[in-house]
Amino acid sequence: MSDDPFQRSQLDYYDQSAEQYESGDGIQRTLNRAFERKARILMKSLGVGPWDVVLEVGAGSGLLTWFMAQRLRFARYLALDLSQGMLDLARKRLAGKTSLEFVRADAARTGLPSDLATAVIGCDIIHHLEFPENALREWYRLARPGARLAILETNPKNPLHWRFIGVEHEVRSWLNTDTNLKRWTEAAGWRDVRVEPAEVFTPAGPKGFGWALDLLDSISLCVPGWRRLSAMWIITAVK
Ligand SMILES: C[S@@+](CC[C@H](N)C(=O)[O-])C[C@H]1O[C@@H](n2cnc3c(N)ncnc32)[C@H](O)[C@@H]1O
Image (cartoon, rainbow, N blue to C red; front, side, top):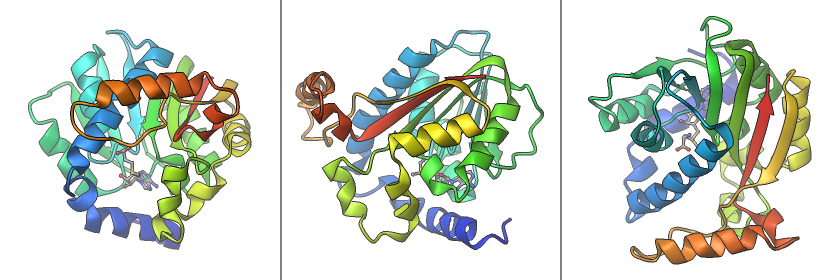
């Protein structure tokens, strides 16, 4: 699909590691607690309704998609990813949800028609793209006037992220400052761009303690200085 070496390396990594992406010891639970919260955060900033056409970019194995599909009513939901391996997992997870469509495409060159989506969402996709501005411009093209963008992106300042030091497919994550994310999004044409710490600070923790960690996360968000260590940024914007 791609002659671009950066994109090729991302694709190879995700195609080959799709099964392990969420099969390690306890990881399923980790991701589920985290993703339930991520879905909640995105829903809060978007307010999607039954008339909405949602485009999820870099949907991967469909973890976020699963929670969004459980909780939301929408007219259409397109889950897009470059990796067939990841999309196969998403299809399996979401089998039976007929309102979902899975699209295999490069996030920066989707081939989809303009003015398609009323909401563009995603999680941890921007730092997997060599030229984020190009992808953000493509999502702008796909968005209808007035459509909202809400993307969660990893914050390299959070100590949990430091495990990715030297990890090749995460190499661009170190560029994820709020300044860069805002600059790329604005350069792509989006307006009212905001990049804020999201309410995600802690790791999964043992089963049954999710409520305590959620509480800790909510408190962390209120502490000036500390809040900038959130594991995720949330980028919001409007077309
Ligand atoms: C860290 S995973 C995130 C997946 C999912 N959003 C999640 O949070 O679990 C990054 C995803 O980006 C996808 N990806 C990488 N480059 C891409 C590109 N150029 N276009 C579309 N998807 C891409 C990968 O296949 C992978 O599924």
